[in-house]
Image 1 (tube, one colour):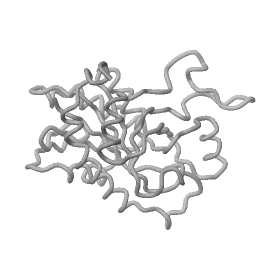
Image 2: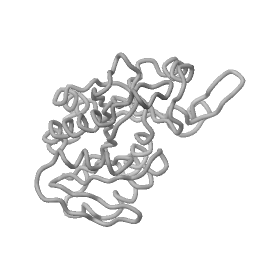
Image 3: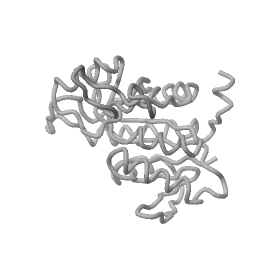
Image 4: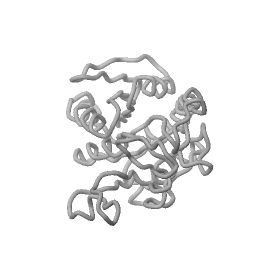
Length: 237
Protein backbone atom coordinates (compact mmCIF):
# COMPACT_ATOMS: atom_id res chain seq x y z
CA UNK A 1 0.00 0.00 0.00
CA UNK A 2 1.17 3.52 -0.81
CA UNK A 3 0.36 6.61 1.23
CA UNK A 4 -0.25 9.99 -0.40
CA UNK A 5 0.58 12.97 1.86
CA UNK A 6 -0.65 16.38 0.70
CA UNK A 7 0.69 19.63 2.19
CA UNK A 8 0.05 23.22 1.20
CA UNK A 9 3.57 24.50 0.58
CA UNK A 10 7.02 23.04 -0.17
CA UNK A 11 8.46 23.77 3.29
CA UNK A 12 5.77 21.52 4.81
CA UNK A 13 6.35 18.87 2.14
CA UNK A 14 10.07 18.87 2.91
CA UNK A 15 9.41 18.61 6.65
CA UNK A 16 7.36 15.47 6.01
CA UNK A 17 9.80 13.85 3.60
CA UNK A 18 12.68 14.36 6.03
CA UNK A 19 10.97 11.84 8.29
CA UNK A 20 11.44 9.01 5.79
CA UNK A 21 14.68 7.27 5.00
CA UNK A 22 16.01 6.06 1.68
CA UNK A 23 16.53 7.69 -1.70
CA UNK A 24 14.04 10.19 -3.08
CA UNK A 25 12.37 9.91 -6.47
CA UNK A 26 10.47 12.78 -8.06
CA UNK A 27 7.40 12.20 -10.21
CA UNK A 28 6.04 15.03 -12.36
CA UNK A 29 2.30 15.74 -12.25
CA UNK A 30 0.28 18.50 -13.94
CA UNK A 31 1.32 21.63 -12.07
CA UNK A 32 3.05 19.78 -9.23
CA UNK A 33 5.67 17.20 -8.32
CA UNK A 34 5.49 14.14 -6.08
CA UNK A 35 8.44 13.53 -3.79
CA UNK A 36 8.57 9.77 -3.26
CA UNK A 37 10.39 8.00 -0.45
CA UNK A 38 9.59 4.36 0.20
CA UNK A 39 5.84 3.88 0.48
CA UNK A 40 5.17 7.62 0.82
CA UNK A 41 4.39 10.13 -1.94
CA UNK A 42 4.44 13.71 -0.64
CA UNK A 43 2.92 16.56 -2.62
CA UNK A 44 2.79 20.34 -2.05
CA UNK A 45 -0.64 20.99 -3.52
CA UNK A 46 -1.15 24.68 -2.79
CA UNK A 47 -2.92 26.78 -0.16
CA UNK A 48 -6.66 26.55 0.42
CA UNK A 49 -9.28 23.84 -0.04
CA UNK A 50 -9.72 24.27 -3.80
CA UNK A 51 -6.02 23.91 -4.64
CA UNK A 52 -5.71 21.02 -2.19
CA UNK A 53 -8.68 19.19 -3.70
CA UNK A 54 -7.42 19.66 -7.26
CA UNK A 55 -3.88 18.53 -6.47
CA UNK A 56 -5.11 15.49 -4.53
CA UNK A 57 -7.48 14.49 -7.33
CA UNK A 58 -4.71 14.78 -9.94
CA UNK A 59 -2.39 12.66 -7.81
CA UNK A 60 -5.01 9.98 -7.19
CA UNK A 61 -5.90 9.80 -10.89
CA UNK A 62 -2.35 10.04 -12.22
CA UNK A 63 -1.38 6.39 -12.11
CA UNK A 64 1.70 7.33 -10.06
CA UNK A 65 0.83 4.50 -7.67
CA UNK A 66 -0.15 1.96 -10.32
CA UNK A 67 2.20 -0.72 -8.98
CA UNK A 68 0.74 -0.35 -5.46
CA UNK A 69 -2.49 1.65 -5.14
CA UNK A 70 -2.93 4.41 -2.60
CA UNK A 71 -4.61 3.02 0.48
CA UNK A 72 -4.58 6.27 2.45
CA UNK A 73 -4.43 10.03 1.88
CA UNK A 74 -3.08 12.33 4.62
CA UNK A 75 -3.56 16.09 4.74
CA UNK A 76 -0.57 17.43 6.67
CA UNK A 77 1.06 20.67 7.65
CA UNK A 78 1.17 23.36 10.28
CA UNK A 79 -1.87 25.18 11.59
CA UNK A 80 -3.40 27.42 14.19
CA UNK A 81 -4.79 25.95 17.39
CA UNK A 82 -7.40 26.92 19.91
CA UNK A 83 -4.95 27.19 22.80
CA UNK A 84 -4.34 26.42 25.65
CA UNK A 85 -5.86 23.02 24.90
CA UNK A 86 -3.28 22.51 22.15
CA UNK A 87 -0.16 24.63 22.83
CA UNK A 88 2.37 25.81 20.27
CA UNK A 89 4.58 22.99 19.00
CA UNK A 90 2.07 20.28 19.85
CA UNK A 91 0.53 17.80 17.43
CA UNK A 92 -3.08 17.22 16.43
CA UNK A 93 -4.67 14.35 14.55
CA UNK A 94 -8.17 15.09 13.32
CA UNK A 95 -11.04 12.85 14.38
CA UNK A 96 -13.26 15.10 12.26
CA UNK A 97 -12.36 17.24 9.22
CA UNK A 98 -14.88 20.07 9.17
CA UNK A 99 -15.68 22.73 6.55
CA UNK A 100 -16.24 25.58 8.99
CA UNK A 101 -17.17 28.35 6.55
CA UNK A 102 -18.93 26.44 3.75
CA UNK A 103 -22.53 27.60 3.79
CA UNK A 104 -24.50 30.84 3.96
CA UNK A 105 -24.74 33.91 6.17
CA UNK A 106 -28.30 34.75 7.24
CA UNK A 107 -29.95 37.31 9.49
CA UNK A 108 -29.95 34.65 12.19
CA UNK A 109 -26.32 33.68 11.74
CA UNK A 110 -24.28 31.20 9.73
CA UNK A 111 -25.89 28.12 8.18
CA UNK A 112 -23.64 25.20 7.16
CA UNK A 113 -24.05 23.83 3.67
CA UNK A 114 -25.88 20.79 5.04
CA UNK A 115 -28.59 23.04 6.51
CA UNK A 116 -29.14 24.39 3.00
CA UNK A 117 -30.05 20.90 1.89
CA UNK A 118 -27.02 19.82 -0.10
CA UNK A 119 -23.38 18.81 0.19
CA UNK A 120 -21.57 17.76 3.31
CA UNK A 121 -19.50 19.65 5.84
CA UNK A 122 -17.61 16.91 7.69
CA UNK A 123 -15.49 13.85 7.03
CA UNK A 124 -14.62 11.33 9.74
CA UNK A 125 -11.19 9.68 9.46
CA UNK A 126 -10.95 5.98 10.43
CA UNK A 127 -11.25 5.96 14.25
CA UNK A 128 -8.77 3.12 14.80
CA UNK A 129 -6.19 4.91 12.67
CA UNK A 130 -6.74 8.18 14.56
CA UNK A 131 -6.18 6.37 17.85
CA UNK A 132 -3.06 4.60 16.59
CA UNK A 133 -1.44 7.74 15.18
CA UNK A 134 -2.28 9.74 18.31
CA UNK A 135 -0.74 7.02 20.47
CA UNK A 136 2.41 6.79 18.33
CA UNK A 137 3.02 10.54 18.21
CA UNK A 138 1.55 11.86 21.45
CA UNK A 139 -0.90 13.96 19.45
CA UNK A 140 -4.21 15.25 20.73
CA UNK A 141 -7.22 13.98 18.78
CA UNK A 142 -10.15 16.24 17.96
CA UNK A 143 -11.89 18.16 15.17
CA UNK A 144 -9.79 20.28 12.82
CA UNK A 145 -11.63 23.07 11.02
CA UNK A 146 -10.97 23.93 7.37
CA UNK A 147 -11.35 27.64 6.62
CA UNK A 148 -10.83 29.64 3.44
CA UNK A 149 -9.95 32.75 5.44
CA UNK A 150 -7.55 32.39 8.36
CA UNK A 151 -9.00 33.70 11.61
CA UNK A 152 -7.61 37.08 12.66
CA UNK A 153 -9.69 38.19 15.63
CA UNK A 154 -10.75 36.94 19.03
CA UNK A 155 -14.39 37.45 18.04
CA UNK A 156 -14.10 35.13 15.03
CA UNK A 157 -12.19 32.55 17.06
CA UNK A 158 -14.96 32.60 19.65
CA UNK A 159 -17.63 32.23 16.99
CA UNK A 160 -15.87 29.21 15.50
CA UNK A 161 -15.60 27.53 18.88
CA UNK A 162 -19.24 28.27 19.64
CA UNK A 163 -20.27 26.68 16.35
CA UNK A 164 -17.83 23.76 16.70
CA UNK A 165 -17.35 22.95 20.40
CA UNK A 166 -14.24 20.90 21.02
CA UNK A 167 -12.43 22.01 17.85
CA UNK A 168 -8.67 21.87 18.36
CA UNK A 169 -7.30 23.68 15.34
CA UNK A 170 -7.94 25.39 12.03
CA UNK A 171 -6.11 25.05 8.72
CA UNK A 172 -6.95 25.64 5.07
CA UNK A 173 -6.63 22.34 3.20
CA UNK A 174 -8.01 19.34 5.08
CA UNK A 175 -11.55 19.39 3.77
CA UNK A 176 -10.39 19.80 0.17
CA UNK A 177 -8.06 16.82 0.50
CA UNK A 178 -10.83 14.80 2.12
CA UNK A 179 -13.33 15.66 -0.61
CA UNK A 180 -10.98 14.39 -3.33
CA UNK A 181 -10.06 11.27 -1.36
CA UNK A 182 -13.71 10.42 -0.74
CA UNK A 183 -14.53 10.63 -4.44
CA UNK A 184 -11.72 8.16 -5.10
CA UNK A 185 -12.97 5.96 -2.23
CA UNK A 186 -9.69 6.27 -0.33
CA UNK A 187 -9.64 6.89 3.47
CA UNK A 188 -8.29 10.21 4.71
CA UNK A 189 -6.44 11.49 7.76
CA UNK A 190 -5.33 14.98 8.82
CA UNK A 191 -2.22 15.73 10.92
CA UNK A 192 -1.31 19.23 12.07
CA UNK A 193 1.58 20.70 14.05
CA UNK A 194 0.67 23.86 15.92
CA UNK A 195 2.54 27.00 14.83
CA UNK A 196 0.27 29.70 16.25
CA UNK A 197 -2.87 30.40 18.22
CA UNK A 198 -6.18 30.99 16.45
CA UNK A 199 -7.16 34.63 16.91
CA UNK A 200 -5.44 38.00 16.50
CA UNK A 201 -2.49 37.68 14.13
CA UNK A 202 0.75 38.13 16.07
CA UNK A 203 3.51 36.91 13.81
CA UNK A 204 6.15 37.53 16.47
CA UNK A 205 4.49 34.81 18.55
CA UNK A 206 4.39 32.23 15.76
CA UNK A 207 6.67 29.20 16.09
CA UNK A 208 6.82 27.94 12.52
CA UNK A 209 10.25 26.33 12.85
CA UNK A 210 9.20 24.44 15.96
CA UNK A 211 6.00 23.30 14.25
CA UNK A 212 7.87 22.05 11.18
CA UNK A 213 10.29 20.13 13.40
CA UNK A 214 7.30 18.62 15.23
CA UNK A 215 5.79 17.63 11.88
CA UNK A 216 8.97 15.77 10.91
CA UNK A 217 9.05 14.04 14.27
CA UNK A 218 5.38 13.07 13.99
CA UNK A 219 5.77 11.40 10.61
CA UNK A 220 8.90 9.62 11.74
CA UNK A 221 6.94 8.06 14.59
CA UNK A 222 3.74 7.52 12.62
CA UNK A 223 5.30 6.05 9.45
CA UNK A 224 5.05 2.39 10.53
CA UNK A 225 1.42 2.92 11.58
CA UNK A 226 0.45 4.63 8.34
CA UNK A 227 2.27 2.19 6.09
CA UNK A 228 0.93 -0.88 7.89
CA UNK A 229 -2.65 0.28 8.37
CA UNK A 230 -5.57 -1.26 6.52
CA UNK A 231 -9.27 -0.43 6.65
CA UNK A 232 -10.21 -3.81 8.17
CA UNK A 233 -8.78 -2.59 11.49
CA UNK A 234 -11.66 -0.13 11.83
CA UNK A 235 -14.20 -2.78 10.93
CA UNK A 236 -12.82 -4.93 13.71
CA UNK A 237 -12.41 -2.21 16.34
